[in-house]
Image 1 (cartoon, rainbow, N blue to C red):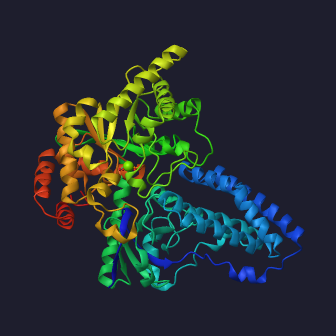
Image 2 (cartoon, rainbow, N blue to C red):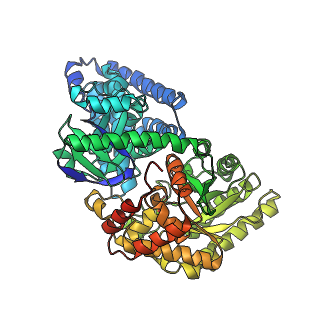
Image 3 (cartoon, rainbow, N blue to C red):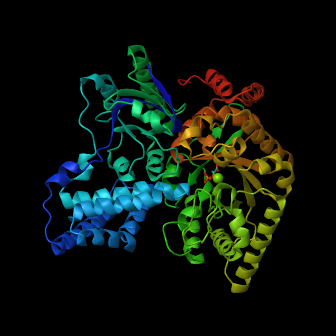
Length: 591
Ligand code: PEP
Ligand code: MG
């Protein structure tokens, strides 16, 4: 059995047949009969209006969640992009029909995005192609939503199908592509798409964001290895280890089927207990919170057992628009999130722009190495008017619920002092304006640079809390780009260097008497939970679907066991050995 290894981003086991999304419209294009230039222009007008109608319908449909709604909003904006529309018009005037004009212009636009250095902008190439195929599909009379879902699998997939059927799904599909359009993922009915295998290494593409929100097992960063996976092949996907096993023999298939059945049962049990607090057997409580990008996500997070928000990625409010959001707009968003937390804290991270998250209207000069460049707190401390506006909105939201301010990418105590001085200025301005605001909003920092982790004991006196951002901490500690498929297998939060920095951070916070949480992906990895509890973590914040499982793991732990597990793991010398040890010590799934 051949096993490929990528980077697992949504955990779980899936068994299904490989389906490559039908991205080829050639058959329809060949049959298309173009009209005159004016007729084609008129058809384009109608198709653009139709595409807008489709996006608006998805956006207001019953199955929409906030993640999908935000992505559809971004697509609506792209449909209005004058450069793109002009590009299509130009091609129609050259005499080619509207559908190839749309495909070619969008491909050229996507090519521009794909060639950019910036990883975030590169990922938008898939969105542009998605729009192009939607509009071309309308022109060609292709119903995309019905073209993409696969045929019923043949008899060979029967076992897998039976397992899925018993949980309400029609068939087990594993989508496989170098990169994938978000609406292809979104178009699958719940439960039918079991796993997603991508060549690209990003965990922040829109398709991956949808997969996370829906709990679809996902492995990214498979790169050229994807070519080794034949269409229609049966595969086992392990989203925890990033392993993809091709054409598994009978014993492996049966083991996978047993794990899938176990997983489904466990999920039901976890969900039934999701509202209970995460308290260890000996009475230590860990607060489990959610990571959100838009305020509307809070409701679903609470239904999954979230006790507040540990990371509100506020940059989503700033993206996909031409101007900065006003203080009032931000206030309304933060207030909605804070109110939704129902008395729990809502930790709002200040603008984390730069690196993998650019903002076109914030003119950041081209940088050779944007991850080490002008980003996050560095921008806030220079563009102080932006920072003060944001802080004022947060302080005002503090009258409607518990809020906290979290600073990203900190490397020194000086930065925290400067930021605190600006928070005080914002409060003075609000007083002068006579606006109500919360006077004592906690200010904490993300620990996501090795500098911050190594000097956590020096930073702690200036902070009200810490939250460990492992996504960046791992990449900066190991010198492994978090979005680079080529080095995805080196990216591990179980590396001994990363674990030492996490442990030192937690101990520094405890000595200072401030709370310490984690909001990077590691927080939602149930394999890491006993280790983090053993280190003494107070809070774990994660994508909401991960909460029930992590809660269940905590409720079965004792802190004495967790501490000895931490000691043993820290004595091991590499990430693979640590992962294997944690697997071995894992509480039996049935427990
Ligand atoms: C992190 O770095 O762990 C984190 C939570 O921030 P982001 O993923 O938004 O960079
Ligand atoms: Mg980060």
